[in-house]
Length: 62
Image (cartoon, rainbow, N blue to C red; front, side):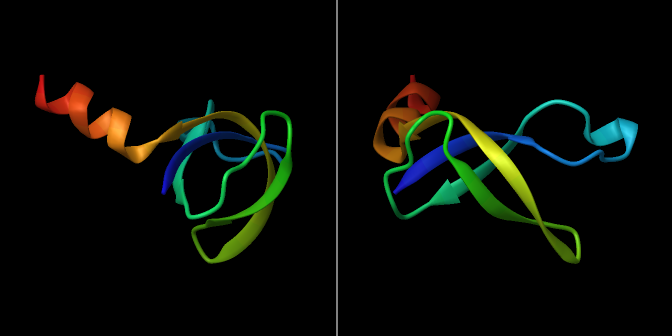
């Protein structure tokens, strides 16, 4: 399981500016174009970072 940070490739409302975070089962590479759910639709986005969930759990516990 991965935690993926993506940048939307479509314009979104100002309050959603910046990157969005999602969980992914598969290993995604940087720069990959993916479809992600956003409210009631699916939008294209580019992968900015991809980190294993286990590493994030350890960082949060510390």
